[in-house]
Image 1 (tube, rainbow, N blue to C red):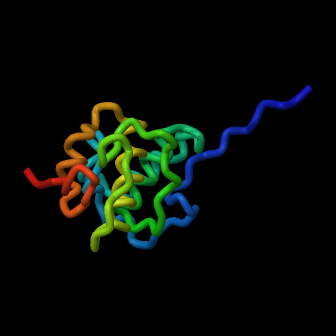
Image 2: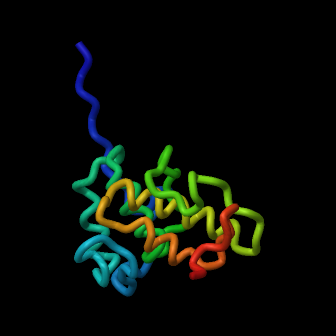
Length: 138
């Protein structure tokens, strides 16, 4: 008989690190009442999240965006929200690497939190150039 797999707890940063000074940083991005929470308080919520859950990657993405984590978790396969239509690659621009990180971030957080609007992330992706044109320009 095989024993059940022991769930892996989600780490605060995708690379397993915890930055210094979390009590002095707060979430600038977040779902629901998370926005404005200190990064130290936010880090306490990770112990109840399984590493394989979409919420783990999303929360690690928020920690990357607001709390000084050095890396994003791996991108979601076939994200429901892509910044370029149909998931097309960004065209070369000064911001291409940042835009690719923003795509990873958007895919992670919208996979876990359906209430987050894909359109709002597209509108915020100013300077990202897709085959259909530049994002964030109305």
